[in-house]
Image (cartoon, one colour):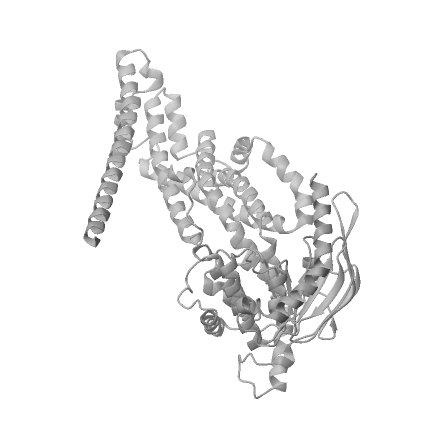
Length: 284
Length: 297
C-alpha cells in the first residue's frame, strides 16, 4: 500500500516538473519569436525600402553604431567617459532627490500644520512642467554636472515625496497607540513605527524614481552639456544619425535594467518581513 | 522624558524592596487600583454634532483585580480604556490610577488590542523586546528577558520569525508576551481574543489566566463574550449603549485558581451567575440590535 503511494507521489512530482519545464520552454520560445518578429520586421522593412532607414534607422546599422561607439569613441571622449558622466549625474540626482523627498515627506506627513502650510505650494510646483526647469538650471549654473544633478533631483523628489507622505499617513494608529502607552517619545514613535511603516511606500517609489533620475540627466544634457550620453544623442540628431540615437537608447536601457535589479535587491533585504506578494504585477 | 521618569520610579521601587530579585514578577503590592469617577467622553462628529460615547461612568477596580466589561457593540467600552491609558482626555470626570490623576500617558500600562498590534517589520523577538527597550533597558538585557517571555508563552524557537509567518493564536501569544514583559501594573485588553476560533480562544484564555495569576496586574478586559467574562473575571460590568453608561456590576465568586475555562463552564455556580448576568445584558443587546438594524434599514 505504502509502496504504491510512494510511487504515485514520485510520479506526480516527475509530471509536475515536466509540465513546469515545458511551460518555461514555451515562454522563452514566445519571447524569442516576438523579438525576432519585431527586430527582423524592422530590418526587413528598411532593407526593402518600405520604411526609410535614413529616418528610422536599421537594426544592423544600430549594432554597427554601438560597436563604433565602444571601439572608436565619440567626439567628446570614449563612450565610457560619457557614460560615467551621465551615471554620476543620475546617481547624485537620485540620492539628493530621494533624501530630500523622504525627509520632507515624513516631516509633512507627521506634522499637520506644516503640511497645510506647504502643501498647496508643493502641488503648484508639481503641476508645472518641471523639465523646463532644466533650461533655467543650465543658464544659472553653466554646462557642468551640477545643473543636471539638480534637474534629476527635482524629478525624483516629487515621486519619492508623495509616496513618503502617503506612507506616513497610512501608519496603523493601533501601533502608534501601543508604543505610546509603552512610554515612547515622539522621536521613538518615528523610529519604531512611522519610518519603518512608510518604508514600504518609499521603496516602491524608488523603482520609478531611478528612471526619472536618468531622464532628468539626459534631458539636461540634451539642453546643453560638455560631455554625456545626452550630448551624444543631440549631436547625432544634428547629423541625421538615428542609428547612434538608438544605440544610446540601448546603452541607457541596459544601465536602467541593472539599476532596477539593484533596487529590487535592496527592496528584498529591507522588506524581507513582508509576506510574499502574490500580485500578478510581480510576475512581470 | 517619560521613559526616564518611569525608570526613576522603578529604581525607587527597587530601593524600597531590596530583597526582590531583579525581574521577579511577584509584586502584588505594585498592582494599581483604577478609580473612574463620573467619566464622560464626547466627540465631535464630522457633521459638527457632539456624540456622547460614555456618560458618567463610575467604576473601581481594586489592585490586582480582573475586571471584565461586557456590552453591546458601540457602547463606549474601548473609549473607557483609552481614557484609562491616557491616550485620550476625558471631557468630564476623572480617572485615577494608583491614586494619581491620569494626565498624559499612564505609567505601567500595557495595551492589548483585538487586531494584533504587532510590528510586521520586526521579528517575534524584536516585537517582544520593544517594551523594555522603550524603558531604556540595555538591548542585551532586554533580549534575555524577551527570550524568557517567549519561552513562557510557548514560542521558544520562533524568535526569528516574522508575524506574517505565524498563526493567529501564535500572534496573540507574541502580543501577550509583549504586553506582559514590562510587568505592567495595569493590563488593558480590548477584545484581545475576539478574532480567534473557539478552540484557540479557550487555550489563550487559560494561558492568560495562568500568567495573570503569576503577575497579578489589575486587568480591564473588554469582551462581547459573556462566557469569557464570567470564566476569567472577578467582576463583570455591564454597559448600556449610546451613550455608554454602567448598568450593573456583578461580583464573580468562583474560586481561584479557576483552572480550565472549558471545564468551569459546566459548573453549577458558573451557570447560575451567567444566567443572572444574561438577564441584565439581554435587554441591552436587543435594544442595541434594534437601533443598528434601524440605522441599516
